[in-house]
Every structure is written in structure tokens, then in C-alpha cells.
Length: 475
Image 1 (cartoon, rainbow, N blue to C red):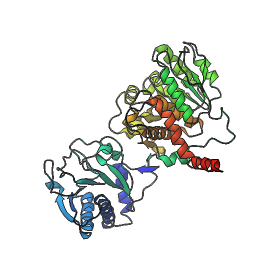
Image 2: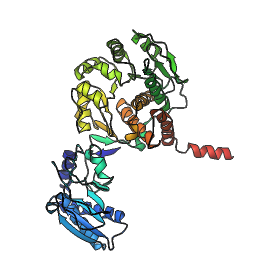
Image 3: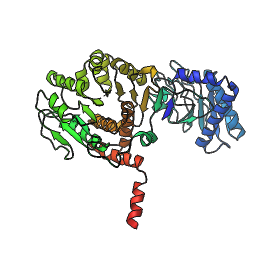
Image 4: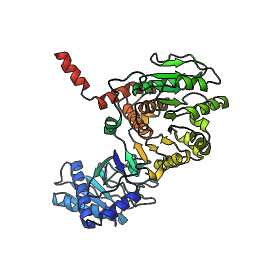
């Protein structure tokens, strides 16, 4: 997992580093790292034209060091003071602009100068005008092709306008250490390292998942959730849809009969051997079904994924806390922005990390706030390190009906395979997003995701399986 440091945490890390190394040394390291990135972008230095926009702070100092390095390598470098390059100013003709106007300490609005046609842009630490925490850019911030950030990622590079304005981000190690961060970004290696393999002596109940989902007209939610769970390693899925609506159900799922009303007891009995449970997708929002949902939520003795209509049944944050505090096992809430607003009483706002933390603290559950940057917060708050895990692998292709239903099944299967609920939610979100990236960039539908997920997990957990099989067949 990759560290993500807020503005405040980065400031504390800088201050701690200065106790053992000089500011000049850090600036030299940072500026040299920027110069090397510039050389890679330019494909060399000799005869290249570079404009460095330098502010008065550390970013400007980094830019001046980069200018010196590039000049010595043969580039024609011009330094433009940030104060002389406001919005509307056109920078001199060049091949590359190095943005060192403002860094992570910047707050407010910034209108960047005009970049010459066909010139690349390299930002130092974060594009000038982008808030380092929220990623907001209220003015006309710098739009970079590449950003070199120092020590660790910043939240503003991952959320809000940050990803759009930062281009490709690389982290340069300049000798600034930091304690265990509160925020980590999940990647493929974490799925490989943390997701328990299914043991040789496994049976279908070892990783069984129970699913309460679907109703007349909403059968697809139940199907997608079930297929997501199976693709993520659930050996058995016990599926219950109140009223037994007709649908082309997955033949591998074991369906249980549930009456239209009063079904909570039957569902709990039928899923008694399951290791994790999902409740909510497509169940409906009437008060009668909400009462049954609440009865199930209170009584399920295993990790529980609360999604879609089950989130509505929870009511507000105080009501959710009162119900979830009665549970003997942990819970995961999976709201999108609208569901978040209904529970929390207000929209999540620009800083999704902070929003997930607030709802986790008020409900006592792990909260997975869905979005382009998915933030998963543990309810322990500052007492937990880390207390937020991020998944940034998703993209616009996942903005399609039913993708959240697949995700809830994936998370439940990861819980059933033995992951802690906090990690299961984050790794599930990452795998879900990465699976989407393997599909078509246009026209992806949620029904594609389970197959793509099986391909992803097979490649991450058994990367040599295909090659071994081919060698065996040849013998």
C-alpha cells in the first residue's frame, strides 16, 4: 500500500526531516528529481527550451535547482517569477514548462499563465492552484502532463480536480521519513499479499456467502450481487429474494424460498452456515420490507455488507448506530453520495476521506464511500493506523447500473475468505475497479464484471498457472 499524506502531515514530516538534514539539501534533492523527470519528458536536454515558473516558497526553490541542472545539461532555460505570470500572461515559447509557482501549502484560487502550444507541463509536488487535501481547483489551475511529488502521495492528487490536472504522478524519495500514515492507497500487490488463498482442504461451505437481494422487477440486483460473490471466491451462495420472483437465476446459486412478508427468520435460518452476508440490493424501500431488513441486520452473527435498500432501512446516522451497536459482528456500509447524504444529513463534500471518517465515527461501522476515489474508513478514527484505505482503480466505465451490486458481492466473498472487514472493503473496491479496467472502455455493463474479476484475481494470485499448464500439456 502506498502512503498518502495530508498537507498537515507533510508539513510535520518536513519539519522532522529538517532536524537531521538542511533545507538546502532537501531542495537540492527535490530539484534534481524534477530535472530528471524533465529530461525524461524532453528526451534529452541539448537545445531544448524550458520555462520554469518559480514562486517564492520551497516549490520555487525546487524549480530553480531544476533550472540549474537542466542548464548544465545543455537546455536553454528561462526562469519566470510566479508573481509576473498571472492568468492571461502567455509564457515564452518553449518545449516544457516546469510549474513551481505554488505547492501543497497553497489555499485559494490561482489563474495559471497560458502555456505555449505543444509545450509539455511538469508540476512540482502538486499543480499550482490544486488544494493538496481536497483536490479542489476553484480558479484556472495548472494542467500538468506529469507531476513529481515528494515523499508520498497527497489526497489532492487522487480526488476532486487533482487527477484531471496532475497527469501521470510519480513519487520521488528525497529522504523525508514519516510515521505510519493514517491513509494508504491500495494496489494490485496488496490483493496478492493479503487475500487468503482458498486452501486445498476447502469445501463449498468454507467461504459461503448469504445474499438477501432482489424483488419483482429488481431481480437483476440479486443476480449481479450473487455473481460478484461467486467470482470473488464464494464456494456457496445462499440467495433469498422475498416473494420468490421469477428470473434466470445463476444456476450455481442455491436459492431459498422466502415469503413476501415476514421473511427475516427464514433468511437467518437458511444462512446460518454462511461466513458473510449481503443485505439490500433490489429489496425495495417500503416500510414492511425495511422492518424485515432491520431484523436481519440486528441478528446476523457474521460480517455483514449493508448495501442499497438496506442503507435506506437504516435511517439516519443515529438510528444506524443504535441498530448496529447491537450486533456481535462488524458491518460495512457501502453508500454512494446520495445514500451518504440521507444517512449523514448532508452530502459528503469535496474531501471524501474526511467524509468517510465522519460517517464511520457516527455509525460505528466501516464505511465505503463509492466514487472515482473510493474511501474506506474504519470506525476507530485516529486510534487506528491506518484509518482510511483508498481505491483509485475505478473509472467512468463503472458508472453503470448494477456495478455496486457486483461490488457488494465481492466484498462479502472477501470477508468469507477471511479478510478483516476494513481490508475486505478496500481490496474489494480496488479489485472491482481493476476488473473494469480490463474490459472495454465504452459499453461496459455490470454483467461483464464477474468474468473480468475472475481473470484479474487468477492473474494476481496464480500468475504462473497458465504457463505451468502449458508446459504440462507439452509433456
